Every structure is written in structure tokens, then in C-alpha cells.
Amino acid sequence: MSDIRAENWMDLHKVLYDLPPNEDTHRRYRSNYVYRGMADSSWGLETSLYRMGSAFESVEGPLLRSFKKYAETGSIPGESLWIRLSVAQHHGLPTRLLDWTLAPKVALHFATAEESFYDKDAAIWRINILEVKKLLPDKLKEVLDNSCADLFSVEMLEDNIRTLNKLDTWRPDEPFILFFEPPSLDARIINQGAILSVMSDAKLILSEFLKEHSTLYDRIIIPKELKWEIRDKLDQDNVTERMLFPGLDGLSRWLKRYYGPGPNA
Image (cartoon, rainbow, N blue to C red; front, side, top):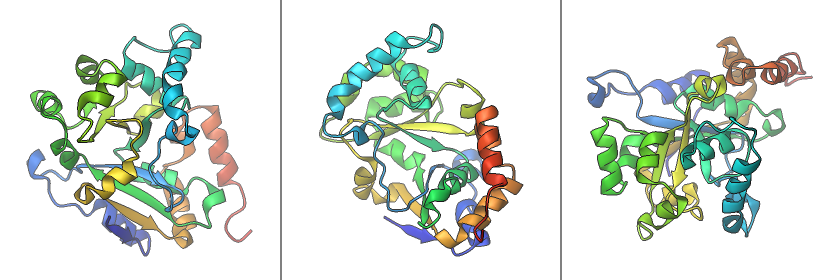
């Protein structure tokens, strides 16, 4: 793993944005990365399903069946497994998915939004989706190539992986990860530039997988001493709960933090 420690606000911007012209997009300055901000740099990339404990594999099926059974009529916009998983993740049900974003400053928000962790260094995990694509099974690579895409849509996944059992048994001796765009369920997903990841087996931990594939990623470490400065400057850039969680709940969370005590209170 390659850790890059940002020493100040300008250094952080250089690390996140000083990318060379992208040959795959006719030398446009477009990133091949997805980002995940975490309030504590010591955390790994375990899914919410994995964190349920030793019996997590046995409850995944009942969780998803019950979610579909008891959900309000029309709240899950389709029968696709991948739509159901996306909606479940979006609303806090433990799943085998992890949240990512295409936007570095959105990742910075999630790395600095929780004041209870301001005594800890934060981290942004950054994964190169083009390198991830190279590790996919040939059939799935072909799906992306035929669509001139680097990320899957829920429709692509539904056409090729209709059940979790098929994913689990696709290539058990060669684990892989895939990234997909969730459906635009609401403004929250759109404003966050949301991307979701899933491993080829629910038992796998992405951070452990990445140790075996160090060229896929790096981490930007954010010293705890920088968190307040980053937080205030993100507010200035309008990267706030008010924008990322549209509605009264997000507005209230933003106002509580914005008018709350600062670092020297």
C-alpha cells in the first residue's frame, strides 16, 4: 500500500487533483479514480454486512427478502437484485456493498464530517477503476468494452449476474471487485457522485484484497490537525450536508455543525 500524507490544504489539493492528461479521454484532465473518505485512517474496508458478526453470511438472504417484503409499495423501483441492493444500501440496511464517489471533495467531506473523530487522522482511499477492470473475468470485461464503459450500470449487472450465488461462484479461486453506478434514486445519490463496489464473495474484505493488488490504489492520509481547516474550506465551497443530503435532515446537520463550537471552544 502506498500512503501519501498531506501536509497542508494546498498539498492535499496537489495530491488529489494534480493528475496528468488522460490518454483514454483524448488528453482531457479526467480522473480514473473513485474515492472513499473515512474519518479514521485505521479503519479497513469491511462492509456493513461483514460487520454484523460471524453469522453475517446466513442473514444476507433473509435481510434482502424481508427488505423487499416489508418495503412500502413503489419504494423499490424494479425487481432487479442490483436495484434492491442499491436501495437497501442507500437506506442503511447492512449489505455487501461499499459507498464510493467520483468527487474528491465529497470524499473529503466524509473524512471530516464526524467531529467525534477529530482526534484521529483521516484517510481517503483512491482506487483506479481502469486497473480494476483488468482483473475482471473476461465476460465482464467484454460487457464494459461493448458499452464503452469503465463502470457497470445496474442493467449490465442484471443481464449478467442475476443472483448473488452466481457472483459468489463465478471465479472462486480468483477474487475480483467490480464498481457500478446506482440508479438515480434521489438527489442525494446524484449530488454525492455515488458509486458502489461489490466483491466477488461476501466473505472478502476489500482492504485485504487490495494488499495483494497494490497497484490498484493508494491512500491519502489527512492529519487530524488539518481537519478543522479542511472542514471550514469545504463549507466555503458548498460541500456540506445541506448539498449532499438534500432535505431538512441534511440542512439541520449542516446548521448544527456550522454554528457549533469550533476547535478552540
